[in-house]
Amino acid sequence: MPEVLKAPLVVEFPFTRSLGPVQSAFLTGLRERVVLGVRTGDGRVLVPPVEYDPVTAEEIRDLVEVAPTGTVTTWAWNPAPRRGQPLTTPFAWALVRLDGADTALLHALDAPGPDAVRTGLRVRVRWAAERTGAITDIACFEPYDGASGEPAGHTGVFQDPVTGIVAPARLDYTYSPGRAQTAYINALSGRRTVGERCPACRKVYVPPRGACPTCGVATSEQVEVGPRGTVTTFCIVNIKAKNLDIEVPYVYAHIALDGADLALHGRIGGIPYDEVRMGLRVEPVWTEGARYPDHYRPTGEPDADYDTYKELL
Image (cartoon, rainbow, N blue to C red; front, top):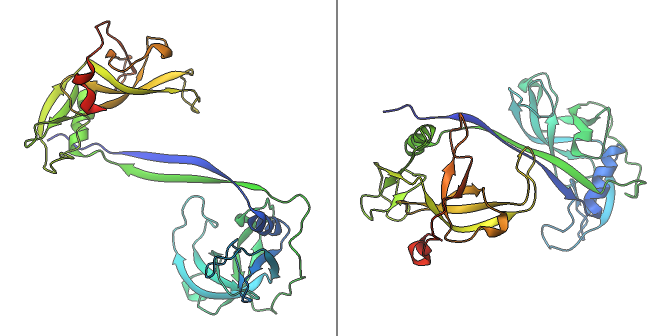
């Protein structure tokens, strides 16, 4: 049996969001070395602040400054920091209830080892040298045996408030397509498209999944399909993707390859985007050294009758 494929993959994108008045004041305050919470109708002070009371759902806007000192309520040791975490040396993740707050804030605690951390430990904020209006303006917490900090009573009104943030999101993982799709990918390297037939309903699935999604039984019988197929439905793409060297507009379609009972995705080329249509007969176009078709182009055959592909829409 051929070796099952695997490869490292990264999913990464910047998440951009606007801020309401409460979050704007909180992050702007961090930039100015001020920690703000919000007071609920029954007098509780929530840090980090939220815009609606989690108990009553009432809108809350009463900002109140709390101290940069506090107490560890619970913690967990992190012996091997990962890329992008607050500290590059081992540290503790800790929930810290700042003096004047009724809830705890999760952040990194810089300590020499797990024996130096305990519930009830007094800590203080270590501010980042450069602050931009983000939670990372708190570089971390550090153990502290001095007096409690004294809030200055800031009202939460700042010049040049932070109105939005960009939070990078990234996921690193190792992906394995499994036995069925490994065979599919290996066949593509030979410019062949292979699916698998369900032993119960006899449908051929491309790409194969290793099991029939309808009957729930394992599949193993390989069936070569295509290479030609029929456009079942499509969309016109008008927004250019980053790092994708394809001029817009272009067409992305579902294509039912001959002999397959499931449509796969593919780009349509060799025809003006506004002439692509349901039923268009297409064939794959390969580029030198590619492991999959670059796009599909019209074959010149008459369009397929709707009844021949309507079940694949």
